[in-house]
Every structure is written in C-alpha cells, then in structure tokens.
Image (cartoon, rainbow, N blue to C red):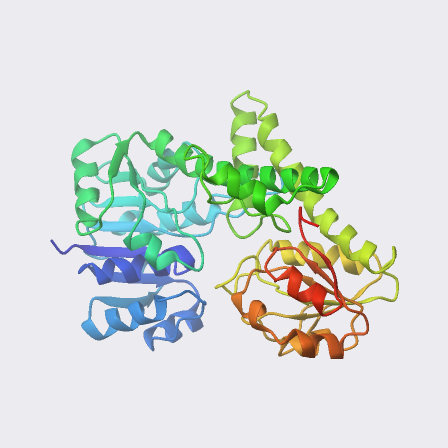
Length: 424
C-alpha cells in the first residue's frame, strides 16, 4: 500500500529514509533548508558517500516517487506521514539540542492535515514526543517515535534489512499505520511506548560503544601480559552470548552518533537522578585510547615527536564513508600535532586541505620522507598497497597499525618495526 510521505531533512538519515521509502513504493517528498543541496539532489547528485544511496535516489527520481523541495512547509501538503530527520547536536552540557526539531515542528504544525502522523526519526531524548506535540500545537495529529539504527557505509542495507523496527506510540491505531509503511521489510516490528522507544536507541549505541571500549581495554591488558588480542577476541566471539560484532580493537570510537548519544544518555540519567558511572568509564577509556595510539607513535619514533613527520592513512571515522565528524583518526592526529609532529595524510574519500594537516592524493605521497606510518581507518585499500614501495619512500620503516589491518609478518619481513593494538 503506497503512502504519501514527507521527510524533513536530507542528511544521512533523512536522505536514506526518503530514498528507501520511495524504493518500497511510497510517494516521498524530501525537504531541506540548503538550497544548493536541494538543487543537486533534484539532479540526482548525492552529496554524501553512502553505498547504494545514489542508485536509489536516481531510481526514485526516474519513477516519479521521490522529489526534493526547499523548506519543510513545501513538503507536508497532503502528507499522511511526516518524518522528522533534522540534526540534534550535542549541547555544551552533553544534552541533545532540540531546537532544530522544535523549529521544524512549529513550521509544519499549521499546515498538516488532520490525523497526520509525525514521526521522530532523529535521535532524541526521552520525552521528545511531548516536545514535538507542544511545538505542533495540534490536538488532531499523532506523534510517534521511530528511531533509526543505520550504520554509515551500510545505511541502505540497514534500512531495508533491519534487525528490528521500533515504534513508540500511545495510540495503537497510529502504531499500526506506521507499521504499514514498512510492509515488505523482513524484520520484527516492536511496538512500545515513546519513552521506551527513545531509550532503546540511546541504550543500543551506548552498549556498542561499551563493547569497543571494553575490547580496547582488553587490548591494553594483552600488551601487558604478552597475549594476542586477535586470538583473545576470536575465542571470546565464539561464545554466542558475546558474539564477534564490535569486538575489534582500534584507535577508539567516534562518528556522528556514538559520542553524542553516550553523552546524552549520561545526561538523561543525571537529570533523572542516576549517576551512570559505567558509561562515564566507557567515555574515559575511549579518550585514553586516543592517547595510547599517540603514545605508540611517539615510542616508535624514539620517544619524542618534535620534528617527526608522520604519515597517516585514514581521516574518516570509519571506512566506506566520507564523514569525519568526531573521527578517532582526527582525535589521534590532533594529539600528534600537539606533540610537535608534522602530519601528512591520505584517505580514499577525502580531498582538499584540513587545518594543520597536509592531505595528499595517494598513500605513497603520504609516506614520502616520513618517520612513522600510522593506520587510523580500516579502508581495505590499505591492505593492498605495495609495501616495497612504501619502504623505499619512508625515511624509517616504522608502522603503528591502529586497526590491526595489515599483515604484520609480511611487514616485518620487509624490515618494518610494527606495532598493533593488543598484539606483539
């Protein structure tokens, strides 16, 4: 059954949501306040790197099921469902800033048809459905929480093949209507109250961040006792209660969601009178991990980074995306710069200058004359680099592999001093 849908915001979540809903057969109008972005999207020019998203946008445009307009007001006329996919950035105190979502709700409130369902797709604190209801000033529309669980780099797949669809709503009839939007998606649909739906999102991201911080702490123990974290993690992961996912040591976690959501959950708990010390520890371990990677680079360089040239492979917070928001790669690089290093970086998805960092066009140029190479993002491209050529252009053969991505035996055969995370 096809529905008329408006999507407010065309960031990662909004654009993926709009394109995928159009792919499912719905008629979708996506709105944004950025005129240049809207113009580009009308031409099928997707401004973000996301696997499969460009194809879906093009498919929707050609089929006439997907369109783009400037401003929320232009999108909601006749819409049965309105998805709010606007930013909820972290405020100075760690809480989520709801000003964008309130502004969007105030703008569209007078324009909605009676019985329209407004859906919070943005990651919002507990109680935000009430915030949106107040901003709408409408007693004849419904507000529903429908959190997203999309991973950058695989967002299209995650939308069309989710582990679950969570719907938070006090009105069962409205929940059934929202569930009907997802007909054709093979996933369990969980209907709960809005507060539980909103908490599920934060708790899920906080738990994943906890797994990463845990395995990075285990990696530190492995280094101290002479164990190999790769074998330790493999042995842990065979336990079905633990699993393999998110048990890969690295330079720390980051991106547009984990830092914001973990801090927001800490603040939500504090506001409710609970000191979430466990999650505070998760954040502290992550900050320590940035320092630990910088320490490894300094140690391999001889103890000091003053006057040292470091080649950095990877700038994005993960592979298969061009997103550098709260990137652990940049967090480590900033610490290297603070200690006096010069950093020359390469990333397959990033071009152009960055403050304090020389960005080059290939991995060999990054290594030219460098004293240490540090691998910070898990791009598969880095596995297949010609390391004989790397050895020729570097001043010293030293590698800190913060992703345990490379073949350490092959590197050592070529005379490289190699340091991974949690392995000798």
